[in-house]
Length: 110
Image 1 (tube, rainbow, N blue to C red):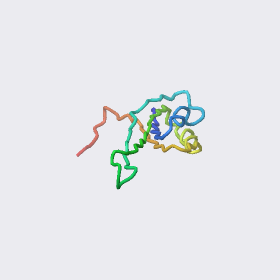
Image 2: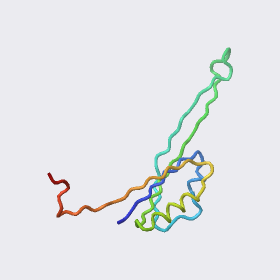
Image 3: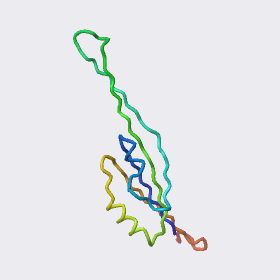
Image 4: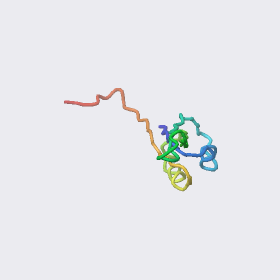
């Protein structure tokens, strides 16, 4: 059975997304997710010169890493992920596991 480990990395700077864990396993796919931008406009002087404004922008970049692994290697890969540290980035780890059901057996008997 195969298991997918999906890692969503969010960062304000692109350098954290280029090589997040130093060296990635060979079964890794990188998928770029859309960036989000938020713009703020602040008045420089609230009492006079209303036309004098200053704008700030905050960009947030996202990337999805998908690592395919076998179920018996899952523990080794999980401990490898726990040891990795990404300073300046937020990451979320999701696990997806496929299971097979026997087709000959009914799911429920009354």
